Length: 424
Image (cartoon, rainbow, N blue to C red):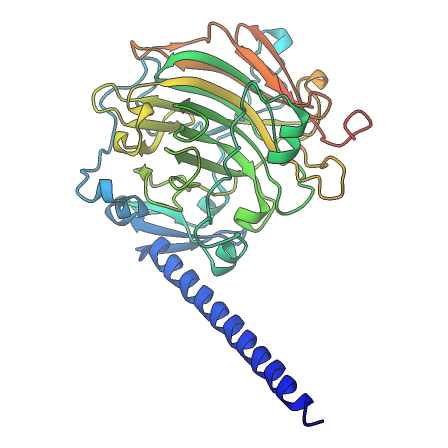
């Protein structure tokens, strides 16, 4: 027994040290999370509780997270762009953010139903942010704790754009991201599209489904510049399965810079009506009413800032030119379309849906679409893309099909169900 005592004591001491270390690590993480929340959640002028559980804080424009960025400490806020692409209606009171039409068929030249509704985000029905403030979705402790680390909260992983030569199935399995996109290569100063809005089903919480525009410049390996905007369903990021408006940016291929929405310094919001990360409602229904959002992103040729407009009149804000290297000049690649994460956790392809969850061949009111796709050229004019190509890593899982006609212009249907008999 006496020989066992030193061993026993050693085990007890080791256990106590381990427990103390874990306890310290837990306290340290809690402190780190609280510091991060204090950085993100600025003091509001007013707070609004949304029916989806969000809290929207009305934060003074000059106090928003953007100005934590070292490059923006002495930045003078621009309330409006100096130049806009020549088709834009400059009336910011135009509220056609989301339109619905019960019968809208591109095979009949895309004629729109005369019945159109103006939609708002869910929180709008419970209050408004006063002028001089912007709506910021409050970050909660549980939001940060769902992330792999405090440092990675609100950030994408590295392989979230469609690498057009990445058709090796082994590479697909490694990075887990799959796409169905249309794309154009050249010299671009902006991009626009009207995007059909759905609520795709997500297989498990660490997967997501989104539909967006990418404006890309630089090399994919290390210094990629990207500006992105669209809608997404991301349980890990938001804690639910709602369809939400989002933006993203990076200047180093998703490594250290950039984030979703206003979860880091960078994007400067000027609009007091639209909350980035806020829920979009209502949503398109299978074989029923269809809802769209229109997004335009363009470079102000005077100061080089990249502006974003939502709908036909609401300028949301801008990404300052100082955030970027390659995008201080122009974008060399634009992608429109869908992306999902396929973790293949059970050894099979995920059932996470892209778009509506239907293949493009299903057509209007069943498959999801992008319509009126355009780019902004060097003269600051909107143009139909000259050469619109398509790409999908696994067309039997998610596919894309382009077309063109009068009212819908350049457009495509895209998406799919993921796992099916042809996509095991």
